[in-house]
Image (cartoon, rainbow over all chains, first blue to last red):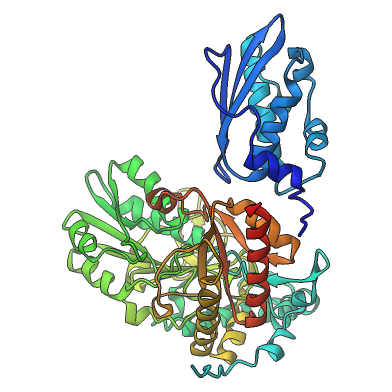
Length: 135
Length: 414
């Protein structure tokens, strides 16, 4: 049985989330929710030399939101903060391998929003309009 | 068990709804989101189309043929609606944008003039946000209190709390006649009696009841009664507030402007009689006329038949859904106490995932908090899926829905 949106890989990340849980003494902790569906994501980051040294996420919600957050943690480990700041919707869609469509895209982008809010906060910079409009 | 023969010929009736011929994701559309909005029959679509093609004009003021025809059609619609809910007087029918605006009208007019510090407003935990937020805003402004009647495990209002919460300090009791989440039909007539015993006003949110069952505002003896046109085969942007004439005459106006005034001078203005006092500006003329056509259509079928058909479908759906592993259905167990609204969850599948999977099968359901966050909080459920039925839905559609639920279950079970 197959589903266009729910590819095996998304369900796998939903069922067995990578980098799920807490970091000891994280440098960054950011959390946000999508009030429309109750999705919640928290990101915890360890930062060293302007790079993401380690990352964990916690949350609850739909498969799209949780799987994309988990995939994102894997993708950004080792990346510089500038690289993370440059990430956007196309990067998340590439990780998911599908476009979940206009009604579900906000689920997919919640993790990225939380991550970017955390990075901007760490750098003491104001959150850009682009970040605010992700979800 | 012998299946009850419904008097609705559904396959013939479905021909009246052009949208039901649509394909979604290569599958025939199965529309189970009727509690959000209903589909529209050809008679409603053609009636609104004919207004624009043949007699589009502003109403009440023009001294020409088109204005006369448009005014007549608009006021005929008001009469049809008055009869449909058994209002005592046609001028008790106030047109609004929707049930939400109708309820805000009561809060902004009667509420501002009559609710004061320390007064109590009694709502129920199953109210839609549109019954809650206007009263929270008013209570904040006036220093009044808002309290909520809770529900029992079956999703029925707790009788003990109704009697406990409604007291001498209560100025208003607002109750939904049928819950948009649990499907529960509330005993509004009885609750109204309790409210009136303490001198409180009684407002009924009828957005989910008027489309599905016969309602009688005189029998309920409510002071105010609000519903939307778009959930009952009518166009969007038109709704109704019914109020007892003696209240509506005394209350201050809602919005100021044209249509609602008798005279305007630089020093002030006086108001028109009912119902126009509450209908400032050019109204949604085509919406009212379209709603009149929707009422005609429902009358032709008969509201008893509408309810009977929906109960048959709901009963069947409950029975079939019970076969699906891991399903939880919320609300009253028996169909006698509910309308055709079935909220549910399937295992630990998030409601939005379920809705997406069903959408791939051409099935439209609703998912989320259903504009009833206090109820979701009370039940401690973050989100639910909801299937809601109407006159054109069939058991075959329920079967396809069950197959899609099974598909979702298997997909997420791996």
